[in-house]
Length: 220
Length: 256
Image 1 (cartoon, each protein chain N blue to C red):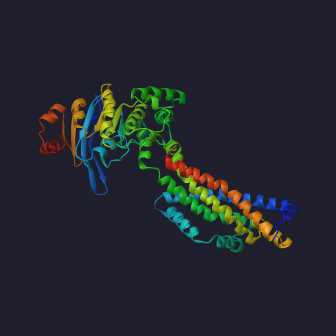
Image 2 (cartoon, rainbow over the protein chains, first blue to last red):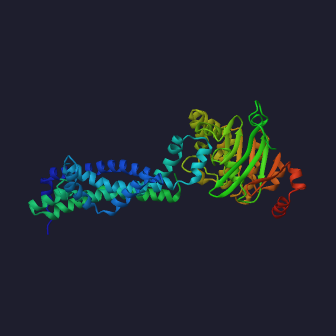
Image 3 (cartoon, each protein chain N blue to C red):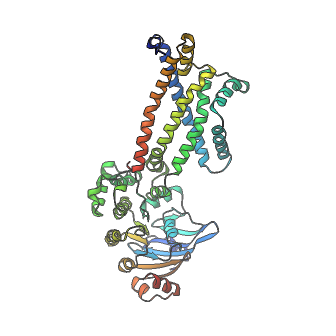
């Protein structure tokens, strides 16, 4: 079996377009997921009431559904209940954001609740207003604890972005399989796709390890 | 020590810094404070002793609005609790608190721990607040550790930073909630030494403590609190040498 690099160079623009779309999907879904996660987290922090039930229900539901189910459901069933039909790209991006938002909500909640009670009391005892209490005391400590699990969600999001190829979004994995089919050079194109995914995720893994070491060492 | 009229409670220029009247606090069905009435004069040092779970901590925490109470009234200088959100913030800026577990902000340097509140609450610039922090940290003997993080300091050093942090707001009252209880024995003295110096500066201090020697030495009055009730209040000599209350007697015989 020979590895023919020339087919890769010939089809480089197609592959780069795929990489670009993958990056766009990841960033856009992440942005939407952060908005969803923040709102749902705020809901779960309420502790009771209708909004709390709704938020807890959201997390329970979308953590339980396989990503392909959400992707297909939104793309094929969404138009039946919504007036407008979303493009495959829009639908796929939102579908990826929905479960990521559920995971982020739980990460945000856990991070905020992990800030010791004594920290909040000390800030209150100093007469800090609610804004500065969150800004100076709660958020910096919570964010540091959230970084490793958030990067974990981003890692999974990058990998799951390949799933939207199933509804025809022309991202990296879609391009690799189509080019492989057209040229019968599956080996080359799928290997390239694998390497690109790995290179996207590698820096995140390094960051996670470094942050976890820093957390263990209690160096801020 | 009891107060009967609003006139007593809100006098024009009162010698009292703190006046409490019938303060009650429930945790669920458990009554942690069963109607505490107390006056503390300006510049007075009051030590509160008593068994753990007797309400010392809960009482101190009602004085800066950290613990809402269910009945009674508290006046701190010119502000009455329970008050509006704004009034509670103002009380907290006038009443510093030092905790048993220090509660320094671990993600900030020692300097920033002390400088933070004056910037956020008193409108100082960072330059002014840092200068104030340096001055206070020198006073509590931590000046050479100023750029370190709390986790790099010993317990005694951390507690001295916590005292400097409370002083940075230039409070009228300082509350100490068992400030030496979580310290190794060899570090207790360095913290008590700082508190001893403070006691002579004219700041009003309320100290919940198990350090009887310290209470006897620096307190103007010593209070005995048990089961959410202030059972006995007297100058230290009378308090320790002639304890009139049988429960105080039995407590003192156990701890002395």
